[in-house]
Image 1: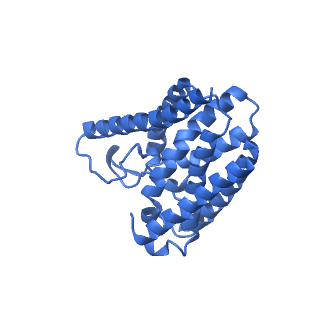
Image 2: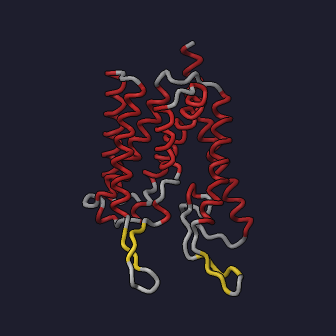
Image 3: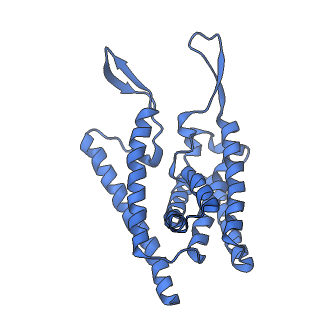
Amino acid sequence: MFSWQHIVWLLIDAILITASIILYKKHRPSFNKVLNYCLIVCFLSETTKVFGTIRLVPSADGSMMFPYIPNNHLPLHLCSVQILLILYVRFSSNTKMRETILSFMYPSCLLGSLMALAMPSIFTTSITVDQAFTSPMAYQFFIYHAMLFALGIIIAISNEIDWKWKHYGYSMVTIITLTFISLYVNSLLAAPTYLNGELQHVDFWPNFFFSYNNPFNIKYTKLWHWYLYLLIIFAVCAILMFICYLIVIRKEKKKK
């Protein structure tokens, strides 16, 4: 984290994000057109990720080979879920639900992509730091998250939403619900080892939504340590999302 390669990528992302916002303010394209561009980036990103992570794995007896994508690369992280949300708001005619989802996308795109760019997991799960400019996976990761950050800002400055404090409540309920669901998904996709029907240890877990393990590799020794970790991340999330909504709601009041 924060190697010279990482810093260079952050500078590139800052330029891309700034250019995107300037172009949006200058030309003011329709919001659906913005979403079309985002979907193109999403398609290129997922295509690159699939063909960059898929590998041939032998069967237990070695007689066959199967293409396999590691579980942690499934599009079930907070940033990856945005692809489905972008698809929905682009093609949905349900105005109320569309506004609710956009209001959730605003802070989750901003905060989720910011955390991903600050702590790029790609350097520990997919490539080495030395491959930061030679691997397509690096371009996929940093350009996709830059797009999400720019989209979050565009949602905030567009006139797509009549910002209310109820949107903050809806978004908190949504993030808590998704995190709770991730507990099931993480357990379902984990690789536990049993002996005589009793769980011995877990060899792998995908850690979607960081609900199983913290990104700082702080070790848990008691179950209540994990409970405390969940409480902390929800508290931090509530504070940061409150700040995000405070900005747009105050701006909305001044406009009126």
